[in-house]
Image (cartoon, rainbow, N blue to C red; front, side, top):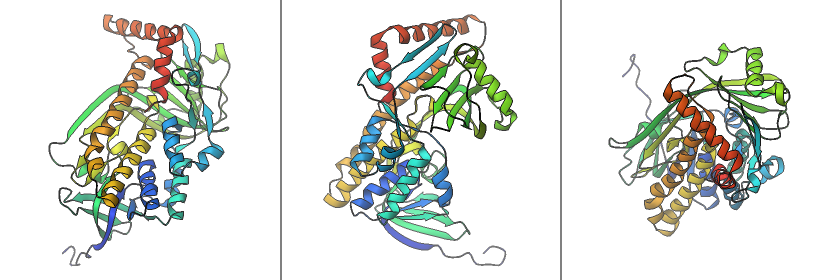
Length: 403
């Protein structure tokens, strides 16, 4: 009893697979399951308009594109996505370009804004008869070690819901119900890299025909095209910076300084329409399976944006889990579910290793002490090797596009 009123009883539902979160992981998983005739529901706390417009990453790896193609989910990116295979490094020693699409495995990214991909996935899921409960927040996962776990959820008006399922897929990020419901003993590997970025989305055409990485004594700056009139920029800033504390004029002046626009040409300015502060962290949980609860995407492992791996790992993990669930629910073969955690962690740690290498390449301490001088000299040597060594370039290209 609360304030003299009886709490409403939770409405109960059942499904084979309860999917928490309607991001890339949840919607890829849901699409594959529905296409194979497996009953599932996606629980998403946001409303449809928000789901379709959340601007995140935009670089899809070749393996991700192949996965989407295999499951009939690549029509939009083939129509509107742009192939991309060049990056440019700007340093105090000059600039150099890497045509990584012609190095290593000779594969390129496809630039396709994540909100467009998610919108495509959501449209296809609904066309296939998939069920999404928008405005419904998963609160906790109970009885994951039983044969019939339960998801406690609530609708936007506060009404409680219960979903009984055979399996639960936690695709709801690092702060979602899946992570909050993990049992004691779950191992968390966490590293704060001590680097903070100001992430910016500008209504401005790209200023480079390449991904731009600027290494500067004032801090890192990055340029990543999204569309013909939208560009993503990053600026390294002090920890604790508030996104609103930088004026647009200061942002553009600092970008031009660090990207050495005086030497290599001015940036094409425009209105900054989105800004956020990102503390670069790595965060991986082990294992990724806890009875009937499986972790996918950011719920499984958070990776810094320095290597554009997050959405790609989410799609890879979702497809792997979909295959394993199909084997179990349709064919009675649980071996894929048993192997899911180890299989995905192999890819996650490989991506984490490259992300860690990129962070060290792009950022250095600002002090004048011996340790700072040593680190920055090593970083300069790594950049020289990347500029001059074909074997180093091949290694970079393979890991840059691979997952």
